[in-house]
Length: 197
Image (cartoon, rainbow, N blue to C red):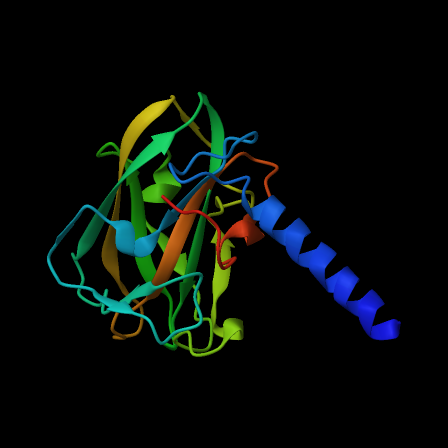
């Protein structure tokens, strides 16, 4: 009897998890909320280097690695489901001893100055364990989430490697990013099985 109850509770938990993950649709738009989740390896173009896809890391699916060279940029086409205000959340890891820098441009420009150059703190590893990964909401100088206004439709996102402090290589393993409404939970990034753009 006890095993049956545990099995039933486990089944209910799995069904609930699958249902909650279905809120993000295959086109990257949240069914009700407007959240957009983009898998890193779905980039449409890269310049200044060549990434590699990694299947042996703890990531939501695959991740990209060897995003090492300063000036190496990646681009994605992203469909924003509705006009509105959004925050940017990145899922990354790196085991360097210093900050590494990136930019996040929308349609060729930084919507706010902070997105022209921001630092990513070391996470302690390269994605071999779940604890190596960070979901980082990009923050302004006051420590608040950067909020940008986007129109509905397709936008080009470009992220560029802008180097690192202390003579370190600017390596990052990158799992993906989210363009989320201001109150959304950033932890949807990295959930296995979420339908990604």
